[in-house]
Length: 115
Image (spheres, rainbow, N blue to C red):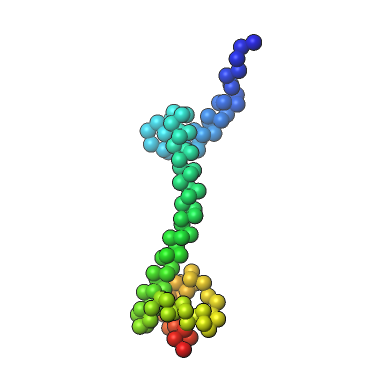
């Protein structure tokens, strides 16, 4: 019996990888072996960066809150400490949005933290 070289299954697997790498540069979208390397790296980075995105957004929210708090002669840490002490349950994402879009509401929240 001749050896099995894959045939249909191999072709199907190769087509799947080449379909996913459409638009990649150079042989990253044409040669299967190169496309497979490039694709595995891309998927690895995509997985890693989905985690990093959450971390980066939290940092951005903290910077925005801090900037708005400093306009009211207060630091970020004092603001958060005051809110925690007064049992105000508001997350940083919402607080940053309020700071950016509704200055009067943020002032009221800062006043609660200050007292």
